Structures are given as C-alpha cells and as structure tokens.
Length: 264
Image (cartoon, rainbow, N blue to C red; front, side, top):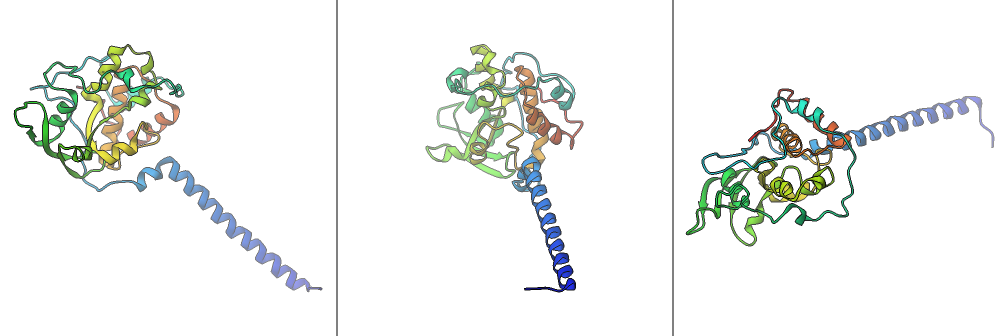
C-alpha cells in the first residue's frame, strides 16, 4: 500500500495536533490533582457562609483555667508558629488513650466534669438534668466546624450529634511530643478548655486524629481561629509540628495575618 506525500504530511500534522491536545489534558489533570491535595480538598468541603468565626475558652464566673506546661505566648499566631519545633511524626504503636488519664476529669475543681463544662460553655439556652447543677441535658449550638445551628439533647443516641473535640487530637499530640510530658501534664492537656470545643459529631469523627495538613473545618470563617488555637495549644504544651502541617497553617494564616494566639 502506498500514500502520497501530501497525505503523509496531513496525517503527521493530525498526529501532532492529537499529541498536543493530549499534553494539555494531562497537564490540566496533573494540576487539578496537585490543587486538590494542597488546598482543593478543603475548598470542596467548605460549609455554608456565615458560620462562627471564634469559639470561647473560659467563662470565669464558673470555670477555672487549667495549668499548662507554659503560658500561651502573646502576639500573632504566625509568630508563635515560627517558634514551634518542626519534626517528623514519632511512632504511634505505643499510643493509648489511657496515657492522657481518665476521660473528662474535674481538673479545674469547680465541681463539674470537663465534658459538661464544655457543653455549658458552648451551648446557648442550657438546660440541666433534674436535680443537677452540672449535667447538661440540652441546648443550642452555633456549630463552628460545619457552620450550622445544632440542637443538643442528652440521650443514648442523640448525644452523639454534638461531641467534644480535642482541637489538637490526643493521637496527634502523642506523636508530636506529648509522650515526653508527665501523666499530670497529659491529663491537663486532655481536659484543658483551650483544647476543647463542642462540635458536630460527624465532623469530629471525620477529623479523627488529623492535623491541619489533613483536615480543616468546612466553615472557612472558623479556620483562622482553629489554626491559631492549635498553635496556641502546641505552644502551651511544648509540642511540635510537621513540615506539611506548618505549611498548611501558614496558608490559612496568610488570609488573616493579624490573627492573635488564643489565650484563656
């Protein structure tokens, strides 16, 4: 079979055009994947506009601050971030929740356990169980992670809708310095109101032990406070960050350069 020179050149031109189109498609796909794994995964999961931008730490009328290893530094969260050591994750094979003491102790000695303290602090129109001044039975929550209004009702199943999140997860803390803390310091860390927020249960489950490099609140309004709070907690308990975690925190704080650390 033979072909003319003109037909050969036409076929070669079409082949080059096809390869050029393919190259553009591949480049776009690679760029899209890179965007998704850097910040796009968080953008895709963004919640509704208008969610809370901050969350409370203490109500001094009935709560007391929990002594940390060192005070949260004054100044911007960005400056505090630069003071944190940058290291890789330590192993997690020896992690056990019991290393942080019994859950929900009354570490501030105000007569109520930590879980009920946080519910009382974060909920509005709080209702207590009959005969109790501590046990929260219900209330409304302007939820910060997904940015929507929730209702807390105490019950075997309904309580799971609102959970108390460790802003710096216990598993994450264990791999980034908490293993070197004393048992008392780890108990303070697990019950420190600075490190605790009432949040949407499914969002808390999805976060797991993730850090800022793997999980951020869908509510963009809350991200600056959230990252600043993580930095403040890590500074207060002398924990470190990974390089990827620090980069993720810097990206968030770039949008709010004046964000201060969060102090009790």
